[in-house]
Length: 229
Image: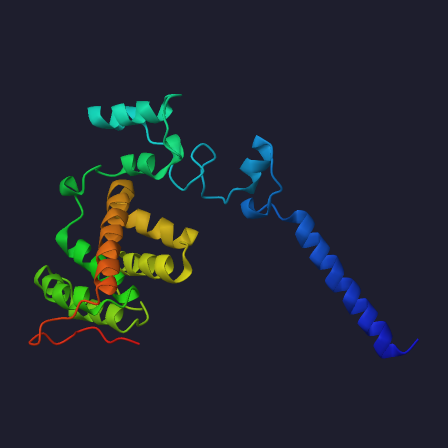
């Protein structure tokens, strides 16, 4: 048999073998054939996801909640609960946070950092231009602001701020958050402030959507501070 033909057959066999092995060994959650057993489900989850909650945070401890939180928790555990996610849904996950952003411990500097990240990722010049001076007034350094503005490397940015910027970039660009980024931002913020930060970022995204929808323009005497693509 021709040597090149033999080599092609061998390569084809190797490729086919590896493809088959990958398909057989994959336990990724999204590749499961449903229905599955509890054991198969648990084995399919990423290493940083809790089996009881199906997320990177465990089901909230009822004893740590205030009275309003305990009522919410009990309702989610009730057979009469009509929420789609129940105790595993986003409403219940928010119990890890303050429950009310007006009671949040997230400082104004961090809030404005997150707002600029959202404004940059949403390419929203109105929101950015109004809030850049507020961020500066609350102590956010111009060097960090320029990293966000020009989508620069995070090299040299303090780890806490870099973790928040990276979180926003992954959410908006990748539509998912890596285990490393989650662990890093959780280390710096803790569960409560991380959940609250997500709430703030969601609010800022809503604002950006509104401003884009109505095509909001700055006043004639306000120079846009965000370069657009």
